[in-house]
Amino acid sequence: MMSLGELKPILATLVLPPAAPLLLALLGLLLATRKKTPGLLLAFAGLALLWFLSCHAVAVWLAHTLVPQYTPVTAAALKSGGVQAIVVLGGGVHPVAPEYGEAQSSPAAAMRLRYGAWLARQTGLPVAFAGGMGWGAADAQLLSEGEVARRMAERDYGMKLRWIDDRSRDTAENASLLRPLLQKDGVQRIALVTHAWHMPRSVMAFERAGFTVTAAPMGFMLPRRNGVLEWLPSGDGLDASRLVLKEWLALRIARP
Image 1 (cartoon, one colour):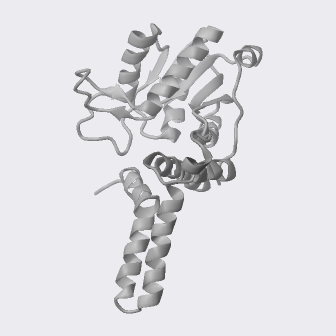
Image 2 (cartoon, helix red, strand yellow):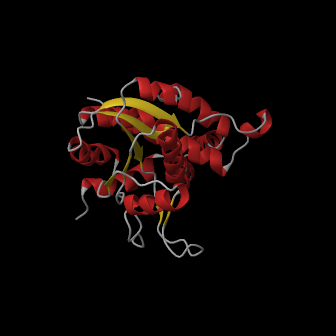
Image 3 (spheres, helix red, strand yellow):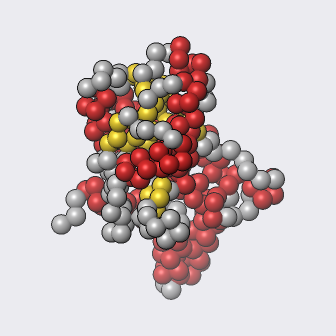
């Protein structure tokens, strides 16, 4: 029997775009066989919602409306704020990368690690990485995200990760499993690196685990193209809307 954690990625897929608008449209088509006008209106609403959520401008609006915002941090602020370590959160793995012959970090995880490495060079602070195998990890994934990140940090940035949590499956476990590792070295104050849209829930999780957190967001949701293209549907726009809505729902669930 599947655990609640294993059900999370399945339930999230069903309630978020593109599945949710498509299911709404399908329901409308089924209804139209008995009640034509209401059914067709419902189907149209589902397709219109899918178009709407596929526009990058909508994703940007959702990000700034639904998710609390954090401003970029500076190296000087980290030094003066007494931060003891930089914590980088995982963001996924490509379990099979034939061109490299081994697993690679996803674009999101690679962006986070790159920024963490940049902050480490600017501040001289040690770096921790949190990421195991997520609840929705592919069967082909043999290496934890922490191990993939360790290799990437050493090969691409010449940086050794001081602490690695390679067992966590979600953001809450990132915080709870990393806590004892850092606590052994007396680390209490951290700079937390993750995408801006993921930061509010991450800060909440790490503060609940007992850390004093300075947010170090990156990958901000901002306009990318000219005005017309921002309002045309695209795969990038749909993915961005989905990420924001997922965080909004997760925040609603995580807050007491």
